[in-house]
Image 1 (cartoon, rainbow, N blue to C red):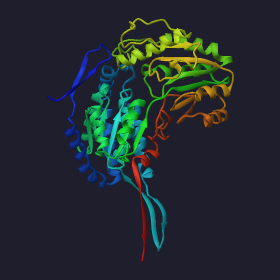
Image 2 (cartoon, rainbow, N blue to C red):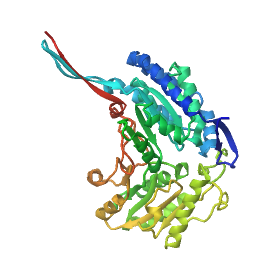
Image 3 (cartoon, rainbow, N blue to C red):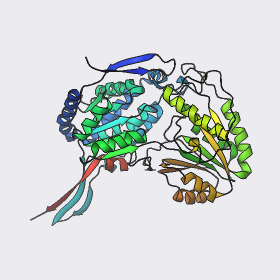
Image 4 (cartoon, rainbow, N blue to C red):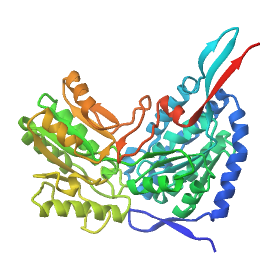
Length: 459
């Protein structure tokens, strides 16, 4: 009998769906099928591949109500936010638009004597290991450009959002992507490791935890298979003395609490100029108290449950430890939170320090610590005092100061007066324990292809 995996809904702890895990041999067969299909797919004109991927986008766009409801059941995001099609379509569309430029040969010489150029060649079989927190948008970051570049794709989605992988496969197949070129698989960690370590895939894209990224790199060790990782963050926000206070509160608190704080680039720590600190905290607390924690199927709910009980336990543990060490909590427990379930009260903490885990470790939940700072230098030291480096958000009316600070912050993206957003025209990348790799923008095509040089002498 094949092993199975259950998807436990965070709404009530019930089993939402059950799927069989592919055996190792079946997974290897899927990879072989992907390899056989890839050459014919890559041989299609680029404009044909782009058109097919765009058609898949249209098909996904016809399922937005279904998407919102299924996401609520799978990972708890309130239906009022309507799923993920907006961001999904924005990213796919941009990658389609820049494909010709991103994949164009670099011509060094075209003369009577020589033709010299560098072409971009698809890797072959790309393995995408996608996370549950933004399951459509994070997957499409790699799936769309990988397919457009001429690769075949094997998608392994997170166990919390198994249905998303199935929906994507349905859409791409209906659009005309051959079944061998795009496959959704349900496999365990050991089989994933074997696919990589035994060279059944040619490129790995992983979004998830630091431990998961380390496992991917260990599996690839010695194979020379490139591994691209995005491993989350502990993203800071800095409110300078000249910031628009109301805009900063609205932007940063939404960045901290949206999706129950389960965002790789969500705001997890905030540093505020001393002159604005008290007013910022007062407004931030009022903002959080106005949220409604509850069943994500209720259109009045603004904050749903965390996706899994173990994530909720980690957030509660970090908050409890901080309070024990002297932090101050500003939000009383909300009615939906019984202290043990997946419904976690959004929390604002002050009197926090970087000795507390809540200011060091990734919380990935609805909690944020806020500290006063004397000046830019103090803020910069604290923002860089982290093992992560995904994004940083600066709130100021001085764009010169923002760029100057941004040059010194150890991070992949710098925002001014916004946060928690992926601009598909800019590369999505990080440093330190956030991992390495490039997603989105024209640079994504360089990551998802290999260079091939042509030195053609004419006689």
